[in-house]
Length: 433
Image 1 (cartoon, rainbow, N blue to C red):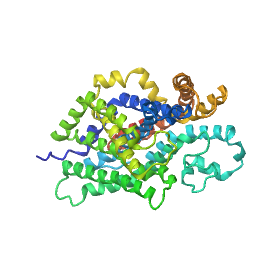
Image 2: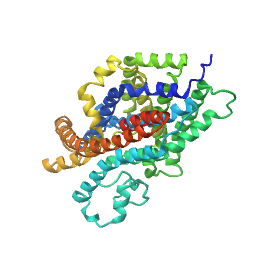
Image 3: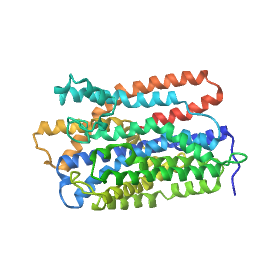
Image 4: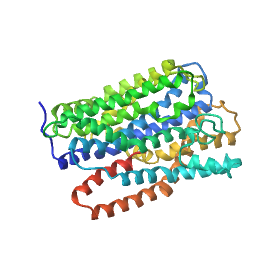
């Protein structure tokens, strides 16, 4: 039976009662992902991923954390558009969206670029073209970079994934407009929320499938590793979060089926997380490519990686995204004070882990691909969290507060309905990384 179409205000209110009410747990997921990337980089630097054993597979599987980051972005940032589509009313403040994204991402990143240019790339300090490409996060599109690889210059190897994120941010309004147009296509009579939600999910599935097509194009007629750092390969991972966003909003519009599905997934957190752990083991195996991170992939292992990593994200993030506010397990495991803190500083952890890793290697004097993971991980993790904390409190948080004051001032002068829109959107933007 089709649920009656709710009012725009009702859907907006319902949408805000979704993930925004348990952001603490999502911060915990973000913290886990940040440390997953750290595990990968330390494992590679100490030579742990070069061995042909289970330990190497598990360490290289830390790359799945990138999938989780992309899924969280899809979940949080697409939600205002999903809400508007299901509400059949309202619009997103695009200027505010782009402003908040820029202020959230760029200032802390620019500090990193300045440090890297002075410490590691001083020979290029006078190269305006290098500065421009690095500061605008467009350096991965250079077909012939002077640093000679598809990831980036020394100290910025991890930033390729941020270039993908930023490209997705820029295109999200266009993507959302196309998805919303398809959801409303050939609609007759009053808005049908259930029909729109189903059509949105089918459209998002098609969007995800583009990653599989693109992965084939990476290898034919010849392998082009540069394409592996471009957005289309990762549509599928963003799409996972977008689909969860649609379900979370749909479940609060009066659809009994959607609400039952969300409730079942949230209550099955143990089964979901166990499934994610098993899939992690499979995804970290040679099925999804070589563990050493240097051997050239094949088209099939590349496809398996997209699918298997995505499935891990589905089962890991799904219960958190669809859980009701105050769910005790989510609060205890992912929303405790330690995880909330690590989630807040996770962007700095992501930004600074490679410079800290390089600095530590130089300090102790070990050559690349040597060292001991278990002894180096705690030290590098503590140093990285320390620098990330400084970044958060002295760069990121002041900017976020400035943005919040601007938003609150706009909200006080905006009409009631428009203020409600900004309420939800600002919350999503501030929590996304």
